[in-house]
Length: 343
Image 1 (cartoon, rainbow, N blue to C red):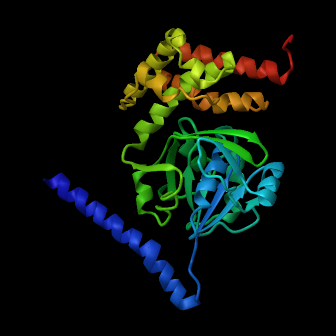
Image 2: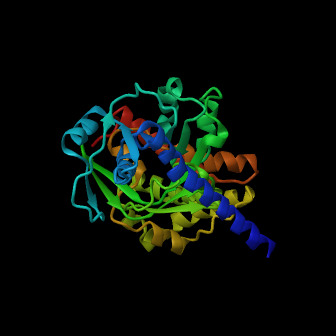
Image 3: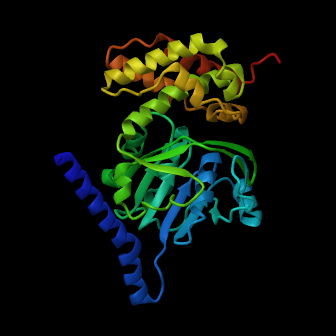
């Protein structure tokens, strides 16, 4: 009974705050200044995932959206719009205002870090001189310790209460400049985000968006899934549906078992087993780690399998398979970088 009443009042408070942010504040400014105040959102990292998020937010008429990305990609989008293939039914191209670098204030702005975990430190350096205590942040990278990277490299300019965690469950593949593929999947942001003025920017878009009351569990669940599929995709150079086949169950079971044991040592039950794993990741797309490998970029192995190994060491949990896989991926990256292959 007490829990039900508490939950009711929590939702009531959230609704009141939403009403103020989304109606009261904006109309108050309209009365004073004669124009509606738009929510400001900047997406830092215009790759496949960042482009999908930008396309979704571009559907909102009450948002002033900007995306930062590579010159060739953003030039194509600025001139011709963003084209999305895959499972998206939308036929029109998405109009997004894109920039190569940041040279504008990020006060009263939601900054979405959509760059790879390996690029986080450089991404933070780009924004430090433009943010203040009104800037809020949403991080969606794969792996563990992402929030720590942000806080440890911001020189206290990022307020912990203004930092939110998200988990991307949809698939995204970069095809060409101005063109990406989208594969349906859920997108979660921690429950605290519901109390921010940006709480509705993903509502009524093509994304399957949800708030989560247990984001840590979802983070661990995705890390464990990625610890299996991402490195195996690079080693075997195959799409997800091939890795989902039963013939690879032995190696998947060992990686999965270690990941679950480490998560449990952190007090988190990730709620994942092999049949569920094979069902979740069975689409005809390729992992983000394989995409990075094919582009000659470093993968996020240190934030995934490497993080499982390090957390295991802290809690006296042995993770020999994850350790082996992490070192193997590093060796593959070194061989590619030094062009040491014989074919």
